[in-house]
Length: 263
Length: 288
Image (cartoon, rainbow over all chains, first blue to last red; front, top):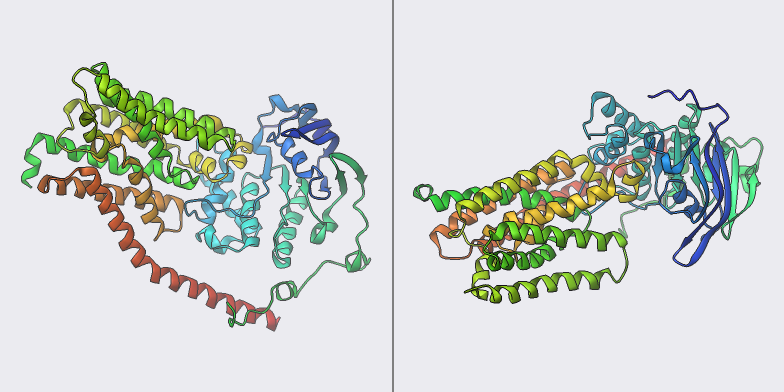
């Protein structure tokens, strides 16, 4: 790891100022300001089409900004090259492609930002195994990703982002299509990352089991920030003061009993 | 093994081994990104290159390489734009290449469409010593790229957006895949033929997938199948008078069918085992 002496401790990890972007002729971001500081866990919320996914994709350079300024780790985006400091989980429902790949092969591809010439040394392999263990997928390391459930796919995609040992995790709807049991596993993995000092920006549809981890919520509507502050009040039992977010029977409740009669 | 005494057979068998290795190697990446027909398109475009070789009295292998590379780069640029009109643009390129080849060959002195037949379907007797030199050089390039950069190419073909955010030079790697596919087409041209090149990029990979779970395993098994069918197909055409391309591709389809037949009970057993494991887990959950 290179040392960054020039970086002040209060330097924002992500600084997005007055960002505008369009998809085709439709303006999707209309002057978005978003700052994420070191160690913060920020949730980006909003309805479908509010621009939250576009905002995150603009931050990782996948959507060009038509106006505004973006800096990552204090470096202007145009000069930013330190991709190994970022772990990115794109919005996906599957980790599969046209050719089978094992879970370990997919997760290893996340390590390429550190192993520039594609040679995996012992430290790289150890990082891949740690990432697999973090999302509780070690026992599936040699299985084909094609054989996994939706929630397990998401765990693989997150392990792929964690394999690079990032300082900043950027996740686009990591909980979409994930059953409650898998959501708890992912929340646990994220909790460990946050405890170790990671900075996190994630797009969410609802706070769900991640709620206790979120420091700040930014809500978008029609490409504009309409709320930037504490997470919106939760409703139901999640709002109760004594609620400690342990769901011992989550797996049982989330999945209907399979009798085998209909499948 | 009397066939090894003939110099033309030695050249044909060497070229066959190189086709068997290179076509499935680049084909695995094309199949991974669901671009299986790209080889077919490059094959069509390469026709213009072959005809230009006749017209200018140059080696058709090198002129075909040049035109195929230009065509493949064009296809990659069209693909990366991601427009729906891309399909039409690709069709123009494919059929323009084929039509251009037919036109130009007839303009060449003493040339006719008959000259193209061995390039379309492959022929073991026409592999010249010059061809072998060219094929060895080109195959070395394909092998160096497909095996040497396999982690990077895997990442790009698996998830392009993610690969870009890891800082990989995705645009360069995409162009490299296109150029490598074009080079493979000309490597395979003399033995398998331009119209059947794509089959050798796709069928061994499809056959390998029936029994593999991982990417490296698929790549390896596909290359083994590729070498087996191209060697046995070339040998077979020594004894029966048939174009080598057709023989090789039919053998590859045969291997695919055998592997499907073998793998179906295997897959069923795996699925049953997985289901059984799931049931045990559910019972454990209830106890807690």
